[in-house]
Image (cartoon, rainbow, N blue to C red; front, side, top):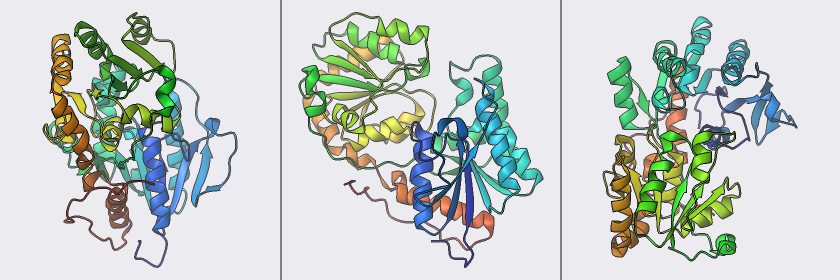
Length: 391
């Protein structure tokens, strides 16, 4: 809890808002914001005005400011963060917390007004296939500027910390994304599909090139597996890449689109034979953490980020970025039932202390208090422990 008699005031911006929960950043704003409020911090979240039909000033103790934006495919997020930053700099908040490295250039505003600021820069946005040409160059430039303008840079993995040091010669602090151990969900939500437990592989994620669903699907279809491959996810717009995948015809493929019911999504995680994780560019991935939390056997693309999350093979196997490697790992996994059982039984042990939302909050609070001149408790040095199961 903040130790100063005056309340610490923190402004959060760069996500869609609160309690809007759609992506990873929105989830972090919710989990972090609510816990900070419980610790006596005044939390203000800047919401995208157009996304909220009702606009209460306070929700669960969090102050909500509904800020407009220049609505366009490219300019919405940047303009929203810019207007939010101006508003925050003319207020009495102690620290401004921004998410998304694309907002890096806007740090000049807080620097000009001498407001303490922190940014969570997430993954390697400039390498994602969807950002080509100018978009890629912008994200690289924005990420570099983030290291110049903000008082503290937060990365969510050791590998991302190394990247920022190597590319930008910038020091950053690692605070992982949080997660929670989940109870198994009964089979009922997926019984309508006539699929038996452990009779399917699972993919969860947007159908975009850097998540490599095409690679996984092609490799799976090339295998001799009799199981199904269930694909949860889509894209919110017409897209040739996603359309080509969804047009594939094979009795073993089942495309579900978005599954918005968390109970139903939990059932798909709980009963899969193995979860495929093809995400390529990023740090701590929420979908992977969810798979660990539900006790999945995990087959992941071999990247430094996925190696870090699975503790170098302790909690899953890896495949290379080619169709034959996926084919081989499908057939090997099916022939290694005991090993898959072992991965499922030990998966939750992968959610060590650094992925605990309470621990994550303590680390952020220490950063905010330090920048604001409050006395901060140092959460480091605590022994790793498993996360308590959610009720």
